[in-house]
Length: 98
Image (cartoon, rainbow, N blue to C red; front, top):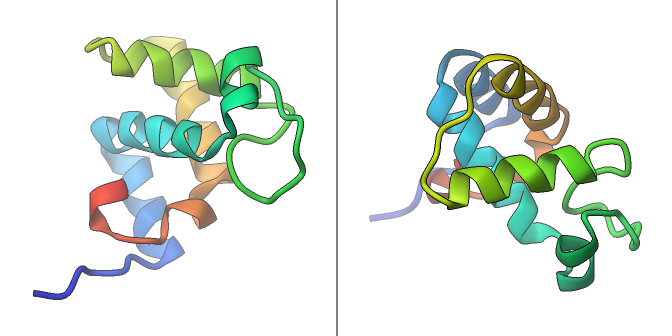
């Protein structure tokens, strides 16, 4: 069975309505960061993947929070949703990523 490729519009709709999709997006974007970017919570390489400079520290924090088994809530979920929507283009690869 072929894996569905989601459009940016579909991903944005999912991110706007599904809190767990926002959490999965934080982890998926974090996984695209280089190892040194993950370790420093910063953007060092302008390679078009991972978090932007303005979202690297918060995005890394959110991804690590989710990876520890916890859920995002309140203002953290709101900020993570903003970050995920900004980076939605990176999440079009396939269903397993979002």
